[in-house]
Image 1 (spheres, rainbow, N blue to C red):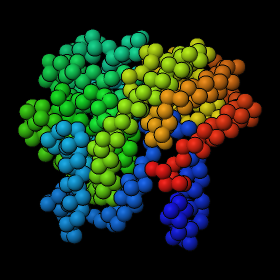
Image 2: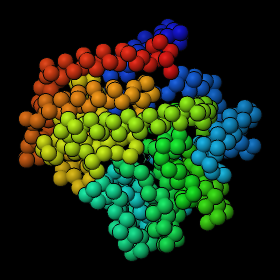
Image 3: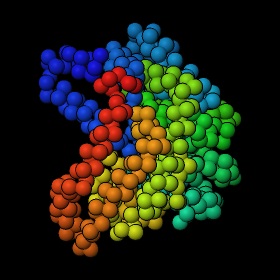
Image 4: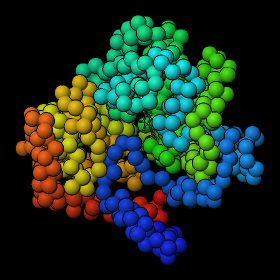
Length: 451
Ligand SMILES: *Cc1c(COP(=O)(O)O)cnc(C)c1O
């Protein structure tokens, strides 16, 4: 059955919405999805997500609900909890957070008072908004101190330890959105234990790699683990908060306090259709094939990094240990990410512009591009495809070399608009787009029921 047959009712009732869904499907099928935080869920996960559980209210937790009729919701939530505990080797799990950001907010509510000191990796150095960045609740309601990465791309432990001893944070985060090396759970645990802080691992990006054995587990070292479910884990949008044995030893009430922080602290009724889909995704992630998937993501990533460097591109930290890499475009010009992103999009390759450590430009016009392999690997692509993709990425980026952000701030927006218009008409990029589509045809997604 193809995709549009599944949407017969929508075709009858709302052609406008249906058309947009079909256009988005076409976009996903025709392009190379290289945003490292994205993935393609299976049809099975999508079916669970599109199920009647969306009709239910079930504030509370299994066995302790405020509404009736929750017999099967309770079972579905317990199924997701049990699978999460098995997947991450932890004693407690909460599967209700709507997404990664509210999951992290719940961790603050459970462990800190407003205005307490907290510590995380700085956003321009790859950290996440919710780890203390000034524009996020985490930097508004709490007092953040931020650690950084060194010139070589690795976390600066000396700085992190110095900051922790000087400021005594209540909560320390390890985990990031744009970090190309393995997360140093053990080293950060030594720092957290020294100052008596809670250590929370935010493994949103690498949770699929952890389950598949392609990245070390934080469970022995951290008190709390949070993860989104829609990145390498390949589930629906959502999140899980886990309490480890070490967390329960530090604070036997920790798991209950996290549950209370999620509901009633931060959320109302859980999204039960999302919970059912998380259960379905975890079932897939616990299969032996998923181990192979996780390792192939990393093999593809390393192959792509090597080939990009062979094609003359500079990478932060000169490579990668995980599913993503950061292209350093300062060799072309500072703030060049915006042009590269547009050129790659014109070529059919979706990436995001990103800051690089010690970026000489601003977060809105950063000097890097972030690339990852989870979605390509889900389509079945391997090292051979990475070689071809690296050539296209390098060639497309070279097409933008003549563009320079104006020094005068007020002129930037207008200049960028003009440059983008030109980039979208670039013949070399259009040619790459044709080649990209041709490759994508060999790795079909939903249209032929492949995944
Ligand atoms: C993606 C991400 C989040 C937030 O997830 P959302 O679902 O977008 O709110 C949190 N932490 C890290 C490290 C992430 O990469």
